[in-house]
Picture (tube, helix red, strand yellow):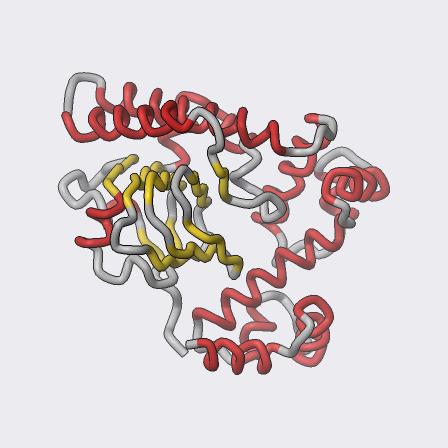
Length: 289
């Protein structure tokens, strides 16, 4: 087993600007110059990736997506991803710190459906407006590269345009559930993200949202077809899978890290939601590599 999966900070890439809050590169340059970037890793920043041509696969938190032209991928801090790209793959990677966006646009970052959700796919297949996205990325890259006056403000405007344009297309693909309900789900998920190890009672989350547990459950079922506790269990399971995959911790240690005092209870939990024991999950991983 490898030790912990590498976690890259923005200055791992922006070497010439040690305090950079954003970074942009051509995908083919990144692949050529950054050894091991195709191996499983996570980031402390947000990422948008535009694929203009190529094929291969992109794995994000144990789900694998086929790479095709005109795709946008979205990653939030902490998500683990890896890829296998064909030699002719072209595109752009755009990275930014949450604070870079939030300083001017406040809470908007937390409202995009493709970020802050384990329920929605972190991918948009751009069927229309392909030239809009390819132009936006091209101009954003020129702005990044040319070091002109007010560069960070103008670059942030491009990031904002890219995310808003993506959000319109993405939201059109969602069911027509009440937007207010989606907001509630996102709020619940960002609370889960921050507290899922310490807080295991749905009622505690509902109280923080000013809802009854029944109402929170109702919203989750209506929008996602899952109960509020299923979302909590799924978040725990992803973390368990991450630790089993990317650390050398024993099953018992992984259970403890996730707040299970009784190792056998952790094994039962894992089997119930993953359909196999942690040991079986690890054996299968070793077999796949």
